[in-house]
Length: 248
Picture 1 (cartoon, rainbow, N blue to C red):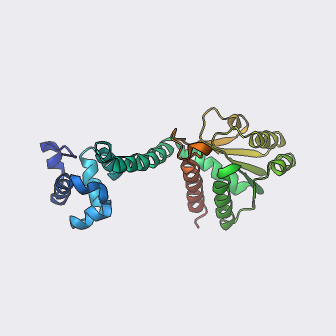
Picture 2 (picture 1 turned 180 degrees about the vertical axis):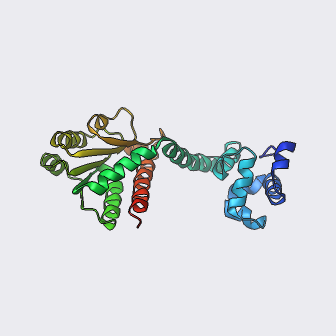
Picture 3 (picture 1 turned 30 degrees about the vertical axis):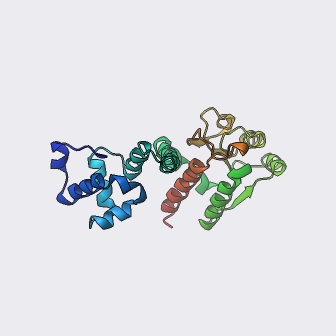
């Protein structure tokens, strides 16, 4: 039985929720091929009802349920897929747990009040920075994206106290980003950092920061291509809060 239930749990379930749990336990052998939408369709319910029923049984959502299933499955292909899905789930949950709403609001106030915003990033993180820059532009901000190591180090020496330097960095130790943060700080500009390391050198020069979570699993080991899920999530959280703050 995939979901263990007792009389107390049964009493807490509605008739529909109980039927959902029975369906899941009865179809454990094919559950790995089903989505939460499929289960809702087969039980004449909704994805929200399926999720609620699972949580009432002490399972923290459908992803955890699927991971429980794949972790005990003897099929290597299914098991590996479960591990991959769980990796993203762990990263996302860790980011949400670590985010400080007060920090997000402070960052938004800085961005709204800034005369100019310089978004800096290097390597694969540039894609996160580019998307963030575009969305800030759509929100009406005066923002520039810089990925050139020489330009960012020169430009950050010419800032004023009305400017903001916003840095995305996975490990927070890229030399030119650290130097740019130091330069911006010396000029009196506000420095904001989004990274995934609590010991990042960038934090010493940052007025505000958000620290995400870097999973120790690297998908393409030859090139050490680590996930940027945390950075993308932090970017989205800031943009969504900012859009709500500006009532857009």
